[in-house]
Amino acid sequence: MTTTLSDFAALAEAFAVHPTDTPTSPPDRAAELESPRFGTVFTDHMARITWSRTAGWNNRRVEKYGPLLLNPASAVLHYAQEIFEGLKAYRHADGSIWTFRPEANAARFQRSARRLALPELSTEDFIGALAAVVAVDRAWVPVKKDFSLYLRPFMYASESFLGVRPSETAEFLVIASPVGSYFADGVKPVSIWVAEDYHRAGNGGTGAAKCGGNYAASLLPQTEAYAQGCEQVAFLDAETTTYLEELGGMNVFVVRDDGTIETPTLTGTILEGVTRSSILQLAADRGHQVVERRIPLEELLAGVRSGTVREVFACGTAAVITPIGRLKGADFDVEVAGGSAGQLTMSLRAELTGIQTGEVEDRHGWLTQIA
Ligand SMILES: *Cc1c(COP(=O)(O)O)cnc(C)c1O
Image (cartoon, rainbow, N blue to C red; front, side, top):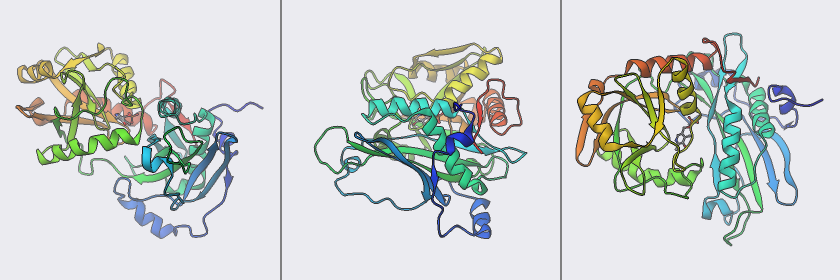
């Protein structure tokens, strides 16, 4: 029998389950699921696959969530050879559990692996690991509206060796964390600090890969954003400091007064978001003109000031779609759409979350059942 990607049970079967001897009690779990803060609470288990150059991917298992044993000379601790993904599992009204375009995350994980000289993991193993951990921890998938189980697949270089070359061994894991609504008191526009002294990624670098190193580089400018009274940082291209690229962990969109929707084109320094490509599709479906191009910051600011730019928003798996209400930089500070959430922004957000939770028809076959 051949295994298809929709055959989640068959994919998960490759994983040996070693259940925890200290499961969270149902009342404790219920308390944890009540109002989890993003990324702080984890389920009882994690999925795991080990790799070595000689043995390939082996030892597929689901085991107790807990600390890893790391040799202090592990390559990841010194040279940051690490990649990750982020996606969510949604519980539908009938109790079934689904993920959104996981094959796109699997493909991106393979591209990230190539760039970081890590071994590629097959799409079957990637989705199988998600299905395996969710099958064991399905009671951790929240029932409440706008809640979901955030899945964090990641891979790191585990070889104990200080020489500079790709690791001969690696570990792949999936951990899972219940998350509530990103905006606890309703969706609120965020303010953005546009960094000009720092860049996230340069030509030929790792900007298009989802790797921890990119995030490490964004933390200081993010701190600068806080100091400027802003919630998030946006980056410009490293070569000319002219074009808007993206935020530290979210892509950006601009809505013009004629209904055109624009997003920075993928130049190799921008991470190709699954949310980004889904929005491009949904907007095109609605008949909007959709444009991927380089967007000069000066042009954007002029458009916001004159009103030809109606809405600006950010997007990514964690917060889905976030309206941007203010853009601030060293020599400008402008409000977008009077600082309120744009109509199209909110309508696309409702459609996308509706598809994910099974309340809106999945016209593009984006959902994959995993439990
Ligand atoms: C993960 C990520 C995004 C958003 O990608 P999604 O697939 O939509 O979650 C955008 N930018 C960066 C830098 C990212 O790491």
